[in-house]
Image (cartoon, rainbow, N blue to C red; front, side, top):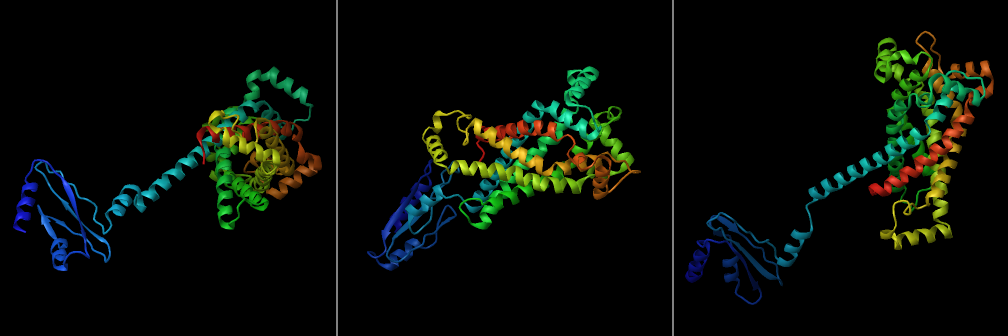
Length: 402
């Protein structure tokens, strides 16, 4: 053993560091020697330990510290290969949790970005139709559509059709981003809870309703400000910040949430129909023979296809299904939209409740008054829904959303 000690000292005083392992068959040597070797050993004040199991090879790992202070410690285990393999390939649980958390956060951010881009593109393209719809609802326009277009072009020029578009983007970009992201999140959570292989129709409608309500609660103040800006006299408020200050100073913070109840009552069924119908149509196609064949082709040619060609439904079918979903949602919930706009226009002195406002609208214009502006609204919703779904699906592919 003295000779071994001399060798050990020689190694520890070298200018370089090294490490080694000693493998012993525990059944082939006396236990006294094994105990002597596997006992706690000190090498430059660093303990080296090993563990022994019956019927296994004994692994003794030593670490040596050179003059430069570098130290190498080999993995300590009764089965060295497994120990080294697990250390190299299995990260700690804490690392796994952090990686999963970062991945989920990044995926959510991509979801929000995709929804925001979809909203900005669709709203900017269709701002003139949105302006016409608001003219019918807010200003009580009675003339035909041609006369209204001519009046706006004559008095305000081409830019008049995009009046309030910046505020509209500020409202719809976060609204759509939250809406799309919330729907996918709620749908996946419901799928996990149910344990089904595929989302059911009822789960799609529930997820859509929850997404609509979530986005409404978070984004209603911006919608209120935008409505005030396009209403008569909105020009003197001084833009978004001016309108915000005016409402807060004269009517209080809660005035930003005027129409919250009809908004929620509107967006719950609207979101349910909007996302539910689109998802049902999409699922029906993907389960058809044509859809299955398309998915198979996408898997085989994935690397060769661009983002447009990778759309599961294809460009035309994505636009069509989006338009159908948008039309169904708008027709089902349009009266709530009319009541909400009227509530947002009320001042403190003339404030009425939701039901009273609805009754007043019917008394003044009959039931058709609840659908005032439906035609220009549908003309706006059909392409808007088409573009929104198309851009959203496209951006999910570009951003590689999971």
